[in-house]
Length: 241
Ligand SMILES: Nc1ncnc2c1ncn2[C@@H]1O[C@H](COP(=O)(O)OP(=O)(O)OP(=O)(O)O)[C@@H](O)[C@H]1O
Ligand SMILES: [Mg+2]
Image (tube, rainbow, N blue to C red; front, side):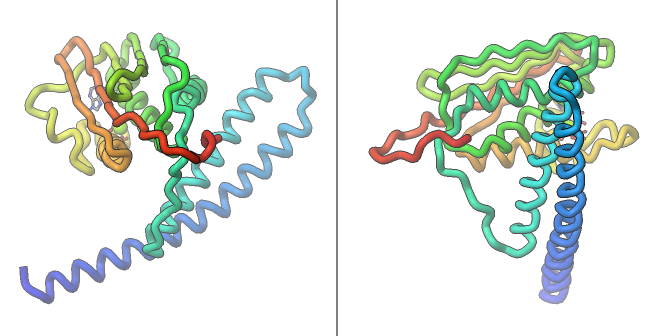
């Protein structure tokens, strides 16, 4: 590659970063409006409207997660590292919270079950756990158009493990490596961008974890994630919220 081509590529990357920052900034402004209106709706509804209030509160959580994500995008564009949570997160609670959030995107014909050992800790940000599980769940739901079983299991021994399993269409052997490539998708016609698994992979690595994929076409797919146990140091910070 010539020096001129390299320079052009760097300039293009810089421009992409600047554009992404601009979009993140405007996205944040819109999200502020969404959050504001959600709060107005929550305040106006009588306490007897429990189900609607629950839905609005879950929408508030999802909208503030989006605000958190777009904040990271802003940091990325400015080349400032996003603040990294060092606090040990209550992973068990984070998984159960995400399970609740997934309720509204889960197709009716899918049976979702979560089995999580209590008290699992991981130095992570709750939004990273959500990003991982939402991406894996969305893919699983897509792989089970006629319904099926979706399972999340988490436990610890010498490592922390999270297994995410579906009994959908499975992934053929020939594609098992490619599915982690950015922009690889088998359903572009449904708006798939092919960034889901690439982002799961990046987050898992960022948390010093590893990821294995086991799949049998026609039977289903399991993603097995493992993370090192957190090393406890005297004076460790309290649990992240
Ligand atoms: N649980 C699964 N069962 C069957 N195929 C899967 C599963 N998870 C991923 N895949 C395959 O891997 C491909 C890449 O997944 P990825 O999440 O990266 O992108 P996508 O789902 O196609 O698009 P996006 O996530 O951006 O909407 C999918 O298009 C699909 O072919
Ligand atoms: Mg996906």
